[in-house]
Amino acid sequence: MLTAAPMATPLAKYVTTRQASAITQVPLSRWQGSYRQNGIASPALTKGEFQVTRGAVIRAAVLIDLQRCFGEQAVLPLQIAKRLSDEDAEQLLADDDPHILLDNGRRRAAYIPLDAEWLASVRDGLAAIPA
Image (cartoon, rainbow, N blue to C red; front, side, top):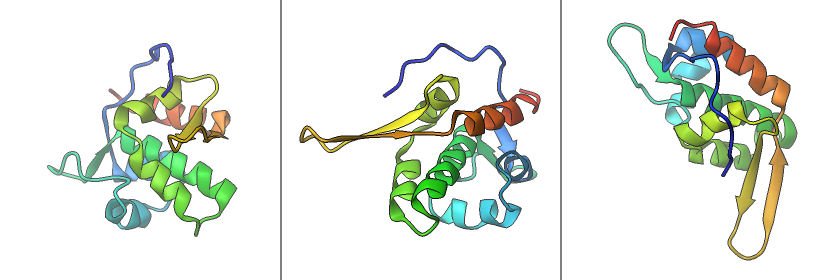
């Protein structure tokens, strides 16, 4: 999907839902409720406070960005975010031109640019948490 250089600053592999909430500026209740129910974030570690992978944080950031474009009730942002693997999500943080490329296999593709500044702020939030 994307080719990017590895990130220089090591990022935390797991974050608590409280930290994810602060990074994405989304209420904690959404992390513990709809994001979990919709497959954006599933429990990665459950000893102590509920924790998610950094890929889940990036998926949520992509969902938020796409909802800004398509609307919060649109189905497409959730479908795209759910299909992002942790690896693809992490590549979005390292890319200078983060985007989603949708291909239906019939010579039709959609290029959806993502907000690079928003993703950079998410990357900075993840970098601030000890790895």
